[in-house]
Amino acid sequence: MATKTTTTKATKPATKKAAAKSHPLEGKKAPAFDAVDEKGEKVTLKSLLAGGNLVLYFYPKDMTPGCTTEACSFRDNTAAIKKAGAQVVGVSADSSASHQKFIAKYDLNFKLLADTDNKITKAYGVYQKKSLYGREFMGIVRSTFVIDKEGIVRKVFPKVKVTSHTEEVLEALKAIG
Image (cartoon, rainbow, N blue to C red):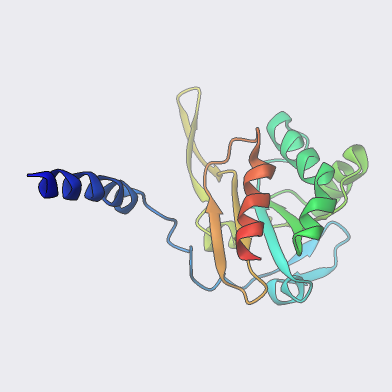
């Protein structure tokens, strides 16, 4: 009987772990893309990975409260992220001109990509049906992808809550090494 109890206790955590779903892209090659940054310059996933690991975060809209909080947190932690061997790049459907204003207003120190046709957001599965005040619409779900320098998605943070998110990202980068 003691053996049965031990076996039952040992299997419970494994069952809980197995029940936790990972994002479909986790452990797979990140979808390639090309876009323009805030300066209107062409950027590709390959060119970004040439600089090391990548924190690719998707956000709904420039200048909104949650997006500003998230961007400023990444800005304030850029040194720690660089020390962990990575760079941050944000993606939204806003234009390069909108990104320029956002960067200037909040002194952001990383690239923002203009995905005005939502090709990148769709490739990463973050362009989804959303609901606000009972109204349904398609939009970008705040999400972060930690991609290693080989182009493999190592960690996905879906439906991000901006509070303490940067710390979670730093932990994921430390796990990559």
